[in-house]
Amino acid sequence: MKERLSGRAGIHAAIRDSKAVFFDFDFTLADSSVGIIACINYGLNQLGLPEAPPEKIMNTIGLYIPEALVALVGEEHRPKGQEFFDYFTQKADEVMADGTDIFPAAGSVIPNLAAQGFRVGIVSTKYRYRIESMMEDAGLLDYLEVIIGGEDVSKHKPDPESLTLAARKLGIDVENCVYVGDSHVDAGAAQSAGMSFVAVLSGTTPAEVFNDYPNVAVLPGIEGLTGKPFC
Image (cartoon, rainbow, N blue to C red; front, side, top):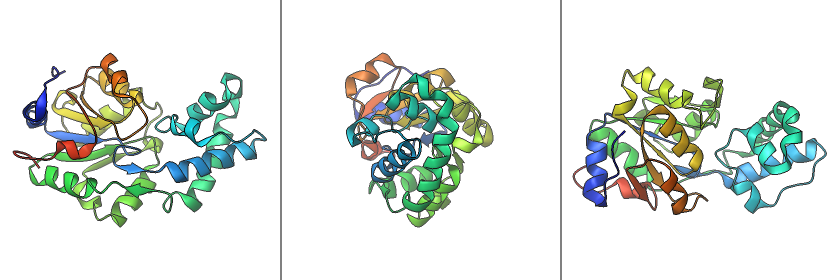
């Protein structure tokens, strides 16, 4: 694990020493909150539960969907997690693409990292096929060498399985990879995997939360990865 470095030069040094950069999706590369809120409340309605306020749902984005149910309505509803997941997925097939906006910075950061020779990928709890479709629509799919979605692992973040799988698919040691994410779940996964972590504040997680996790930088957003000598 690389130590935290300060300033743009430090960020670049941390990335320069790596071979791959993996991104979380929701609130790191894109804002899917409109679609996620619709899907969560649809699932709650189907279970006969009251809808959750948007601000509460926003704080669950990035969690595996059954875990989001528990966070929203309590541990006693954990047995309904798979049913809730199925309802969420059903609605997501209808609304998620239109309810997601790829951050403009992704259109420059991802191609520029790839042009510099870094292996670039996405590691998310969102379904891989959905990410692939949205990144293709954004003209970014060809820059991505690996996408790990929720259907590809049996254990979800903050478990390290998805990150270690991404590194393994590229044949790169986890110590030579950087994970960029917006939440404590992402930070915890990187820590468990032994992977360097760059936090971005484009989600709902306050900066101070990342003080509890190893990280090489805390940035306002992925645009903080740009600038010479890299992007």
